Length: 324
Picture 1 (cartoon, rainbow, N blue to C red):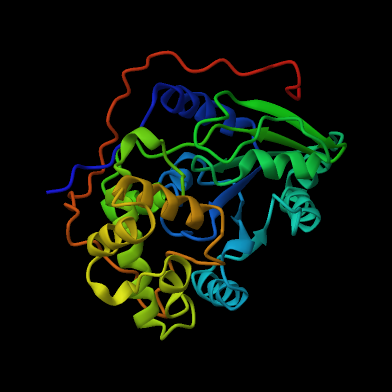
Picture 2 (picture 1 turned 45 degrees about the vertical axis):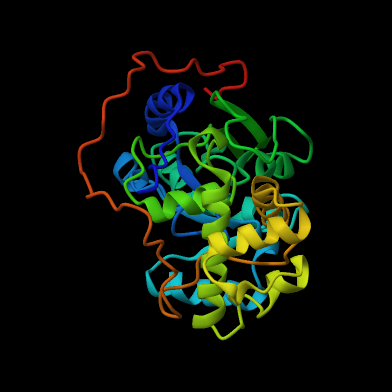
């Protein structure tokens, strides 16, 4: 039986407590997800924390999935009553339109203020999402300069900070947040594959083998329209049809790395995460087909009780740039 993947470091527990307090002062939520796994990077408690706040759904890293899949996701989310906006924070695609959308979503705030004889103020927007989905990079693009630390790894942002975009928009940069317990282990593996979770929480060989299995399943159910046939064979000179993901990883190590399976696993993960394999998703709209399920992963029953954090004090929020 494979070990469970769990990751909930102390800084996330602290940030979550502080974030829930700041949500009282926020007008609009920008929920940022990874376009490769937009279902697995949805935090289930956002609606519970701020049920009366408008939420703008952003799928970042649009360049890492095929363009036709973006349209399929748009249609699927629209059928769920949710508009989505694609961005690429790395190259700045979709950023200007996103700023306008966020400001527009907060118009009702100033309408209410004016009706009470109060002056309009900037719209306060919080950027929420799992670790390493590109929240800080998106904020830097919105501001037009590097104002928050950004890197393609989980756990870089550790404290909340207000950033002024212009006279009409203030953004709250929040650390990546995760559920205290990852009950859906299929989703947890996808988080590991996309580098959206701490590296200490998983085994490279296990998740790399799972990547091969998922790509093969997507090739089959979409007939090569989403994941091209022979993708791995052409890259690593090993045919992915030889057996399981574990079989493939062993063969890849023998052919390319003198039998070093760990090196093969790290190379496969690195190439996927950097886009070397091309625009490859791990999830597709349920209307097209269900993603592959790893039979080697123990599924845990859902729980509605949020475990208590061992951390008692919330993280301090920077107030030097906090709006009044």
